[in-house]
Image (tube, rainbow over all chains, first blue to last red; front, side, top):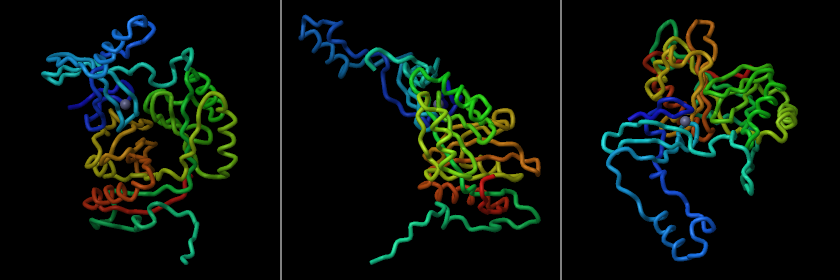
Length: 102
Length: 210
Ligand SMILES: [Zn+2]
């Protein structure tokens, strides 16, 4: 299996590490349900433990540790191992301007 | 009580046996050099400062910093891409303190610098069969079309991080590849390259960076 890093080009999969589903978003206490602590707890339970077992295309985090050391988001078909796209994860490199509070 | 000598020495002090190894013949197929006395600095642009970092590089070295996996030859150093908004500056060691000071001054506020001069070992592979030797342990495509002069790559060799780049062809017209490796892994990589080169005949030596 070869993976096309958006920075390095196509490389053998041994240079990459798989992290998992890139879809879960960390719940935000103030935004999600500040007035309902139980709701936040449920959201965190989902975020930390519950994963879909997708048969088909899935957005995944991959780390090019054996190359440019960038976090990537890949769309991979879990049935065929076909990679549809590989892009940089948010925050890779220095291009992103400083966020408030960072 | 043991007397310690705090002399610096090459990480290849033991592994590098100068001279001819492997297949005999009029010409060695592979020429292997440890390039000593280098100054090596990792430059990482700070958040939102990629453009400023590029300008600073241009000011000091007279060339644009590489934005893609390439090695660019500047006035006093070669700049090798090492990741998004990162590159490695490599230069022959002249006056290390002033070389580092010049960089610290020009990149102040735009990039973070990390001195790697004694942390990496530079191995140069050349000769008519150099590419064939590398092909045995690297998964990169080193064909002229895929990896021309000036191409660079961060890659793994035997699970070890290696920065590999191709410089101008040697006087013999054959490709010249440079491999930067952590000093503690250089011994192992050196043996791997020598073993891969034996069937072609290999001439090993060390040289001062120039
Ligand atoms: Zn990469």
